[in-house]
Image 1: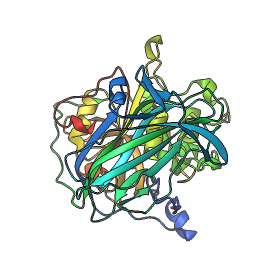
Image 2: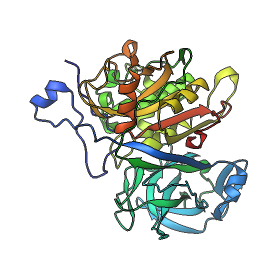
Image 3: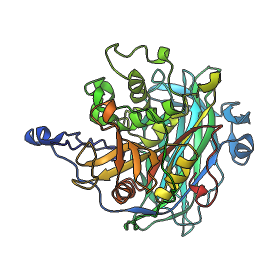
Image 4: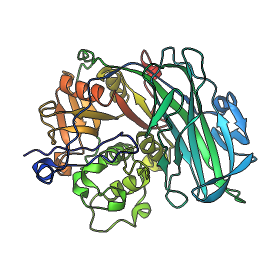
Length: 433
């Protein structure tokens, strides 16, 4: 029997969805979550601030911008978090106007946080009726776990929107015509260390209830990037404190496949703490460092891209900074542009029984895999970490089935991860990256 897997990548913070495997789980009386109703992205636009000039366009409150990064210049106050006192400074973006009424916002950031430091991310929207909402905290984040336990924020149901783990969602009748993001840089009282924020931004999207017809491929020949194949399933039972491996680790496993494709990822000394008997121990490192202690899982979308950005590419004897963010793509034609530019795409999918032929799992209410290429006829070549071992990760999926699974429950949600010296594609649609 092909197992059903719930590798949920987004869920209410107050709900712990069970991870189940086929008949064994059903016999135990556990509930298999059903795929979500049909939906798709009608509009999406990314805006990010990532250069000194960009940061100068925002409002600084105790921060300085130099060499393409925000740091603490002079703290503007102190605050308590998790029982400890922190000095803080902040930077607020200008209003971003996507040109449509957005009903979802997903922030992304690239930062480094030396021990004793962290960043807090918050977002604010302005409705199409001209009303400005309150600031909603999205996350308290640090790259390691020696300072804080990184976590997403509570739902904060207040005026016009609420937070669903990593996504700001507007109330049913509300649309945002503009948004801001604020990053607060925090450090232990008396410390001279500072976080370093290299980019901050978000994707604004308008999600609708209809799924478009299958897109026509732009491929004229097959292209398959040499993405390494790692199975999440070989980690079953590893580190229960970080969700026990296996079915729960689709997101960090996918993130690591893209990092290793670019010659990036943790050095051996970084994961020396992993049990020597565990295969692909760098995946354990990714799971630990993407883990969201409020959500209780490693599937927080921006936590995965933030982690990816902390790992420099080391190919050719040098060291190149990684750039990573969450976006929403409207069709596989967008993904084809990235593949042609040499950039794999991590895609969030959901599908029911029989809806993705050839998949190693029969259904899922949330799963991530890597789009590694396309055949000449537009079929999707995927590195699907749900394969039972590394040798069974490569899959070729029907275009129509895959696109529907990706656009429906995942709303086209994708991670874009690349070294800064690998250019993003231009042209029409580039506003999504």
